[in-house]
Image (tube, rainbow, N blue to C red):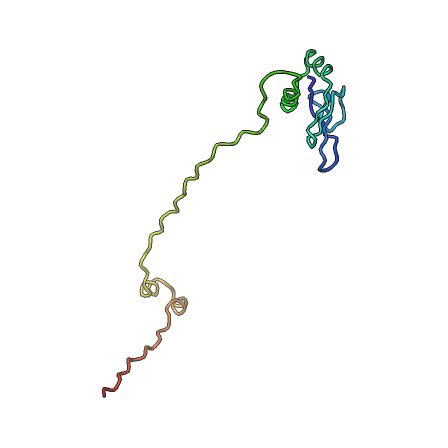
Length: 141
């Protein structure tokens, strides 16, 4: 099937496009095209299309890409509604907060740890008791 599409021919950061007639299987970068139908420079926004050739090829069955269709409508070469070429936005995904499994808090006392642990681990688990200072009395005057 024949397609009328844009082929990029500009340098880096300076896009310029050529409007070409090519087979739909051909890549736009392959350079294989049947006819040049015009050019388009988006920086100056001044397309130069050969309207007679475009209409002739469309009558013979050539299809236009969506972007070229919109450009041809802007230039009033064809009539119709524009086609939305931007991808549809995916619907916003409602993020449901995932509840973490509730951890069952066990009241662990050093006595239980000592009773369940082997003797080597007991020395590491049980903190050494720190002697507390007795409160000193202040002399009454």
